[in-house]
Amino acid sequence: MLTHQTRYRYDRPVFLGPQTIRLRPSGSARTPVRSYALRVDPAASQQSWHQDGFGNHVAEVVFAERVTHFDITVRLEADLTPRNPFDFTLAPTARRWTPPAVLTTTLREKGAPAQHQQTPVQQQQQAGGGIFSRQAQMAPAVSRHPFYTSEELTGLALYCATPPAGPHLHAFLTDWVEKAPRDTLDMLVALNRALAARIGYQLRLEPGVWSPEETLARGVGSCRDSAWLMIALLRHLGFAARFVSGYLIQSSQTAEGEEALTCDLHAWAEAFLPGAGWVGFDTTSGLLTAQGHLPLAATPAPEQAAPVTGLLDQCKATFDVSMQTDRLVMPDSV
Image (cartoon, rainbow, N blue to C red):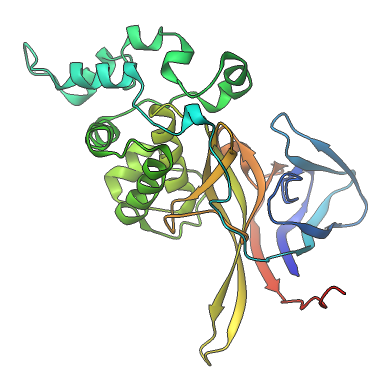
């Protein structure tokens, strides 16, 4: 049982614009959710539910009067029975991975001797701002994403948009393409572990997500930073990928050595694999997502998955979050 409370306090009565809350587990989550409730305070508000364009359950809250506080309480019960994260089967056409032809061609072109020296910025501008040349960008979508049919690509187009690659991302891709396994699942597992080893975890409370280039340059980042880096790499390597915000529930030990459950808001990446669907990769741990990962919002870009968004008057605000987890022992079935 998880109780998640978010509290905003304002230094004066303020008008709040419509508030969007993305704190309801997806109906397609592999971790079963047995019960769910969302409470908003002040209670004198209008609350409605709908699905956004990406299939996420979203609550819209509207306040008619000024408020001095805004509280959100989520209570849910989830079944954390262990499951095998590799319990899926790839389509035969997706079991063997080869770099997209446009990627390897462009990497070879960039590795060739230049007639005159250029700065990395000039090289990036000449390449059209990304790792793909203009000719590569005009190549048929199926050739850039050979795993997918034309019908699949129609629905995955937003998750295939490739962010530009700067010098650090380009260098990482060049090295990875040369040494990566050609078995699809082996390659993805190895890539996830490589990022977890290379990018140190850093708790960042300030809003926003670093670009993949900045995360690689710093060598550290929050879970959302490394997840966005993974998504950029996956898209350059020919995969549809999306950003996921959710709960991470896991066991830990207290100072007294007793086992306890902890929960945090977390972020990870998912790749769409024919035959398996969306498969999650946690770049913080280097593991595939399992029963402790409970997705709340899955979107093409990080800013679309923020747990709470909305407008308010200019004011001084304080913000507090608390999570309480309790283990419920279910009776054996008869």
